[in-house]
Length: 289
Image 1 (cartoon, rainbow, N blue to C red):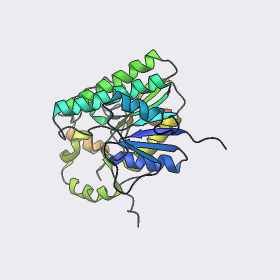
Image 2: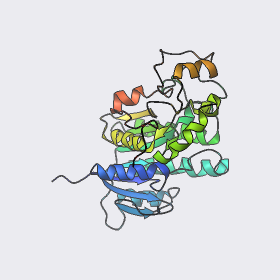
Image 3: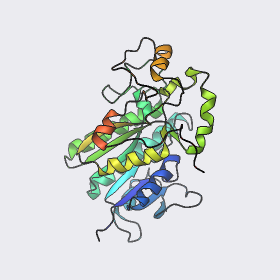
């Protein structure tokens, strides 16, 4: 029997991290999870507490702690996950060096498969300045509007150059939308009367289970170099059709193509094409019993 791929997942205790660890373990990966704080209730696989701002700790994590196997790949989700949760300097000082350390440790250890969490914010959120067109996608230059988003933009640029230095390296930067758990869907009805309440991210979201699917597909994708992917669900958080929302809230923003039904305005065509990603969940589905 072939040995299972060993994957280090950083930020494993976070909202998305838990979905990713559980999904990869169920898919047959050997998961080495890490975070600054252990998750309540535990996770599948190994867990190690570590500070990713320390390059030495990152090298040890990826090379194998206490005689554990070295990693074949790394999924880097660890970060202060949004603007305003810490001071700008603290957010930048944690997130950007941590991503550099993961990329550098992978380079030193010869790990050629890296998936890293970027953010929808690099697309221009909160869209106080309207987007250049709809649906938004990966084709226009990043438009960071906060220190958090600036950091994510710089992390993508670092990854691009690490991949340029090593043509055998694959780095997939996943621009995740607003992560939701199934229990979070109870709040969605409250947004229906005011389309501007969620204009800040074009009414997008990502079910944590589909976010985990995207991570696995990025790990398994067959390409080299750096690629960024918008990762969102196939629909919006609204009951109204997307064309009507766009016309009311962004009347001067051109459409690149006609919008169908409640389709997402965070374009996921590239992820569908290159990763085989297809969302399997929606807030419109009945909650699990």
